[in-house]
Length: 256
Image (cartoon, rainbow, N blue to C red):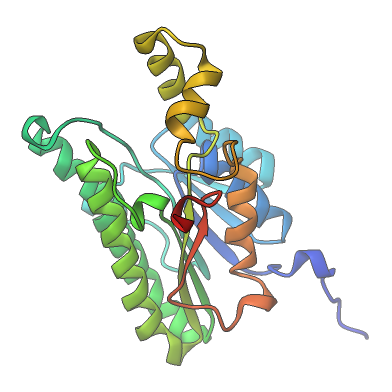
């Protein structure tokens, strides 16, 4: 009998992908893209109803977890072939007014949780001789902006962790890379646009052009699906030699 070969666009058939922050925005787009490529997706998010809805849509498994709680993170699956560390949060304030507890929370969710998840899944990847770590970083993993000390610190830390993972994983068939988008059209950013429009008394379109996209050459927000496409490419057959890299999707921000 001739063995069944999955179609080319199902190149992740038989793989398991764990995506954090997968109930909305970039995470949701990643969950959908990886499912279309044939992977079974663990949809990890604190928002239980939304996570279950995404999982139902793509045939995945919803896992409702508070990533700020280390013991809860350590209960996540350890059999993922692919880990997409995407979950994050933002707080904007001057350093001298930044709440220390908020700073610590952001580090737990955006640095410690990725470490715990990768640490838990690397042994299985090593045994199977194949694994892909995709860290959804940011242009703020490569550049800084004022009033975002916790977020910029976390993204820079994630960049360093990704590179160490790349060096350790290479002999075992595991790659680790960052994707670095600029401002993405997500609910979080849309809310920021509305708030700034009200605060400055200008239209939402002006907020996007004058504030969010001031440093970019391509004057539009990037869509979650574009970020997901880059993450998926890093797990495909054409990216086997790509590791320890940071892939800017910033519309030319870092070209300055």
